[in-house]
Length: 295
Ligand SMILES: NC(=O)c1ccc[n+]([C@@H]2O[C@H](COP(=O)([O-])OP(=O)(O)OC[C@H]3O[C@@H](n4cnc5c(N)ncnc54)[C@H](OP(=O)(O)O)[C@@H]3O)[C@@H](O)[C@H]2O)c1
Image (cartoon, rainbow, N blue to C red; front, top):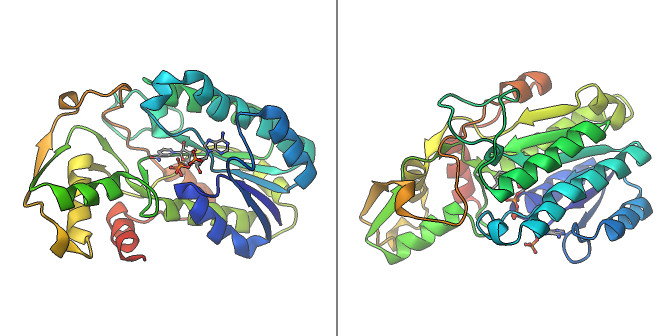
């Protein structure tokens, strides 16, 4: 299988790179070798490489900064996926794309499924929604995986921030009114690769993916508030002896004003993914414990 991976230095991209390798010939790129904000460069690069599978793990993910530079956020998160979907079709290739729980406004109080109405409340969420819609409309062999609260230990994430704060402060205040599914980037990479492996078992991957094309919620199982997540991070910290933090206190989102609003509740129901592909996502605590033991 000839695979083009875009975003190899990102949290998810790095895990995808190592996990995709057994499937075939992987060309892994990131900015500036490939620039999602330059549609013509993007087009010619994809045409030259002529992959059978395009995995787009790159995105504009700076949620607050997106409020200040919406044009760039829309170029990377909305226009580029449309270009990739067009090129994937021209090559009869599979396209895998990732979206976000931030397409929802967070007003619901039970897990969101794929049919729930979207209503993004920030530029990032709106730009990602436009991108996923393009892929869903255009990519004949396209899968969009909507995920949430992605973390890695390799790049700045909520997990690395909490660890950093725990070395500095005796008391941490963490919001308890934002609830979602913390998701280890490795869980996402492995689920993606399992699906691709199934797609190539009986011949042409695009034929198989076409029969399953569409939108899937995909995240680690269970749910937590950021407060509960922070407690678990400190509990699983392999170097807990270095923590100065003696207490974590619950706080409200309204106490920490930020340029972008966040949905307070964005738990994704991932049943469709698990049933369609016969896969099971790990519990978020199991993933977190493993992630924190991984050098
Ligand atoms: N992080 C989350 O909590 C979260 C939650 C829900 C959904 N998602 C989605 O999951 C996917 C993976 O997210 P992630 O957390 O792994 O993202 P990430 O760590 O921020 O990685 C994104 C990658 O895209 C690259 N990139 C940015 N602008 C680019 C451009 N113009 N051209 C080419 N590459 C560019 C980044 O490079 P630089 O580092 O140089 O900018 C980075 O390597 C994304 O679709 C994201 O929207 C993430």
